[in-house]
Each structure stands twice: as C-alpha cells, then as structure tokens.
Length: 137
Image (cartoon, rainbow, N blue to C red; front, side, top):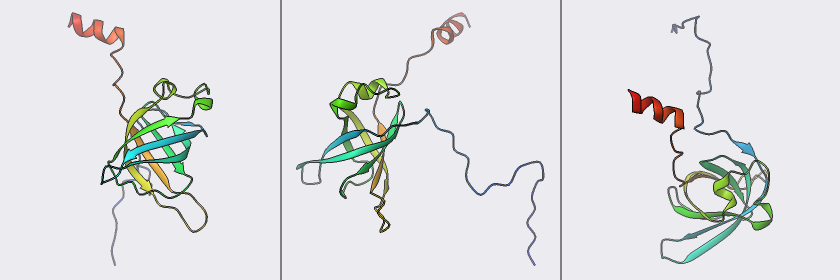
C-alpha cells in the first residue's frame, strides 16, 4: 500500500499554475499568415484570431497547414479588423514577425488546426518612475 504525503496548507491541484506575461483578450478577427517553406517557397494561409495579447496570439486555420514549431511567420490582421477595440498596437500597424511555438492539430470533431504565435515585438520600455529610482540608487 502506497501512502502519499500531502501538506494540508497547500491546495491540491492537478493543473499546473501558469502566469501569463501579458493579458489575453478574446478577439475573433480575420488574419493572414505568410512564411517560406523548407524549399524557400512563399506560402500563406487565412486564419482567424481567437485571442491576442501584446506579445502573442492564438489563431485557427481555415485549412490545415504544415508549419513546423519555431518557424518564423509574418502575421497580419486583415485591414477591416485593425481598428477593433482591444487589439494591441503592434497588430494595428500591419505585419508582425512571429514564431510558431505551439501547434494544435485539427480534430475529427471539427475543431480546426490552431497555432500559438509569439510576436517578435520590441520589449516595453521602463516605466519613468522605475528609471528614476535606479538613477538615484
């Protein structure tokens, strides 16, 4: 008989706790991915955004695509959706370089293939108060 020691002061969870680097917003907008395949041929796919943040996006593909993990792609929200409330500034200006960091395969139940993208945007600058504190220390 195996006994498992648990500390009653900590809640037991089965799901790992993950902290997001930026708040996600549910946004459903048409977008486009452009990339070069292993032979250097330009490819593109129409996608739909499901959620976006300042540094990432999750998109679903209209048709299955073959994009390997860590492939660099150009991500662009279609022009008619760029003025949508909640859309990060980096996605309002046109194309953004992004890396594919997770692929969710299509399912027989009808769920489309999904891609998690990490946007290659400049990191935010220091808040002025933080810079002043460092200057005086």
